[in-house]
Figure 1: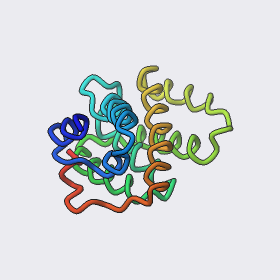
Figure 2 (figure 1 turned 180 degrees about the vertical axis):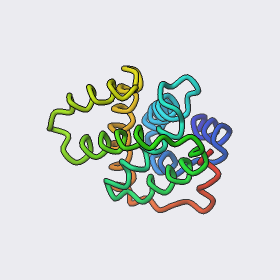
Figure 3 (figure 1 turned 135 degrees about the horizontal axis):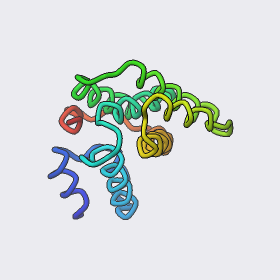
Figure 4 (figure 1 turned 90 degrees about the horizontal axis):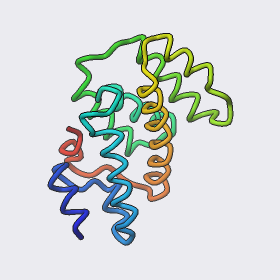
Amino acid sequence: MEIFKKIETERGMVARIYSDFHLFPDSVEAHYGLNKALMLSDSAPLPRHEREFLAYTTSDLNDCTYCSSHHQKAFENHKNKVHSERQKLLFKLAYDLTTKPNKSVDYLKELFLTQGFADAEWQHAVNIVAYFNFTNRLAVGMNMKLEDGFEKSCN
């Protein structure tokens, strides 16, 4: 299928988060497109290391070893620009939105903005946490195991 050729060409391999859904290629294409927009775009509001931090933190909170392993490796590949105060706020957002999503996070938005985050970065961060709560459930629901050489797709 064309989408799997595209993923392999762009990412170096087809991760199981896509290949395990080969019987539903429309969902794979949509999922891959959203992943590219949120995690891989050069024009995304948050820098790549903060995106990867949110991805692996949310995945850890969900006990999703599959996604956590992929994105912790990607974070390690991009972590040369970590800002601890921003990282603390990102962790708080991931924690609150993952563990108590029905509680208001309005105070967090205000805190983000007073700590120097832009509105677009706030929206991007919320999108990433929500996306990984979705993706973690895909991986856990399919009982995904790490691929040999998964690191190839963590660039």
